[in-house]
Length: 291
Image (cartoon, rainbow, N blue to C red):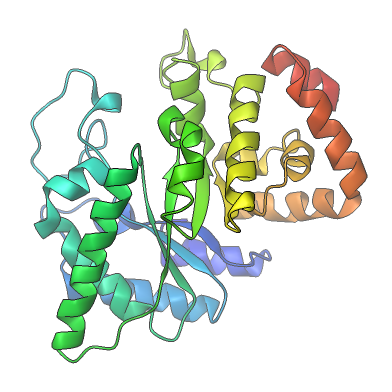
């Protein structure tokens, strides 16, 4: 979700928290970037709406093909593989430090978690965590209380999925972003009509990476969420349950049907479906299996 209104809707339809707070909503449609105080009050309002339920704040995911009026960046020939998300974070700390400071202040007394997008290496995680801790030290020196937030990453590129065992040592949780992961795995731009069908997150190649990420996290006692259209797809829910997924993050309107489906399945049924899906040769075969 990305606005206070969406947060209210999510509570009304039974959300047990926010799996991905898209902080870009504060940056869109304006010529300047929001300051720390504005961000603090916006995050605080959403956190208060959810009380002690978890809210996962994703740091700003812009750059590349995601442009903001208040952010001047040079054009890129291949924006999907360019300077965006955590890569931009690490080169423009003056822009991201206010966001981290606002989050650390807003999270006091609430169940806030902070998540970094498009992580590809262990070094990126360590560098981002270092910036967060610098912000914490600054705030405490200024007399502000700060939240003890869990730190997670988006697993949405193949390198992160394949290095999940090492990355799990650096963070508290994973959130698998299947929209991006599927297009990177299948080398298919989701916005290109001719190849978009290839970027199907139910392809066994994507499902096998999801399986491996969950397994690597669980071995190290870390939990895994999944953010993306796949989490709310009725065809995918039995498979994801069977793969051991801990949390489903989806659009609010998908929640009632998803909860109903989860309640209708046994663990044994989900395990059998997942094992069969992993053995298929295409996304079409997986969907036929579910039908």
